[in-house]
Length: 138
Image (tube, rainbow, N blue to C red; front, side):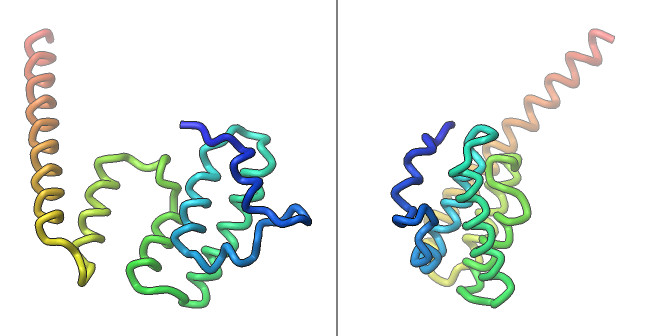
């Protein structure tokens, strides 16, 4: 996926800096941070977006601003950007994180767990089958 760098120009002020009031929207800054990793090397505006967003997100962690769940999400994102992670592990992390929420929709949570387990079982079956075939060839 590629984000057109010009899209981020609208978040800048007349001086060419990212608007300071953007930092009030923690989810928005987190999204900006994740999106900033999806450009090509040398795209200056995405590098600026990454610097701006990581600075503000680290400030949130250092100052303890935000709810526990949001802080956990910010900390998780700062460890490694989303698109650098393994999808299956990330899905499990989000399921576990969602389960901790007081307002978690239990039906949605159970559906997510069921889907995860079905896919996991299918992948394990496929791996067993491939192992069996490799063993037969050897």
